[in-house]
Amino acid sequence: MAQLIGISGSLRAGSFNTALLRTAAQLVPDGTTLDVRTLHGIPLYNGDDEAATGLPEAVVALKDAVAAADGLLLVTPEYNNSLPGVFKNAIDWMSRPAADIKRVFGGKPVAIMGASAGNFGTVLAQAAWLPVLRTLGTTVFTGGRVAVTRSAQAFAPDGTLTDDAMRRQVAQFIANFVVFVERS
Image (tube, rainbow, N blue to C red):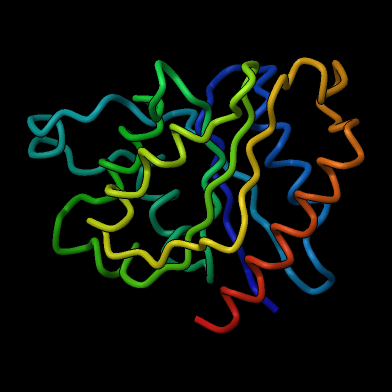
């Protein structure tokens, strides 16, 4: 079965997106693994720093984990109707050096989902990721959508997704993504 890696695009301790990623990890089909990762430890990209000291350890570790995985799940917040800068920054770091893009992202099956406090989930952030993922040469999964709305009501204070319909939707989304990964 598939070995997936999932990255939460939020640094917040009580992040609904990290909680959503953990929920997805609990709901993967038998035999599939989902390695849950965050962006902690990744500095702002600076080409001068890269030239002087190379890639930071946190970037190398995340980049190698993505390259080794069969599929990548991006769990994105939505900031100002688009993707979060901290998340894009991590992807920018992982695309360095440019000659390594194909090893890390080339043909990689990628799915996107997210949670938001608003009424529209993260549909605009998810759409904003598409040109970035195309540029990196990934294969974007289009077999469903998970955009948790009103996340403060959908999750318990401990991060448990309590909305049963949404849990079923996440489980189906992940199951469909695994089939997509295995066929890619």
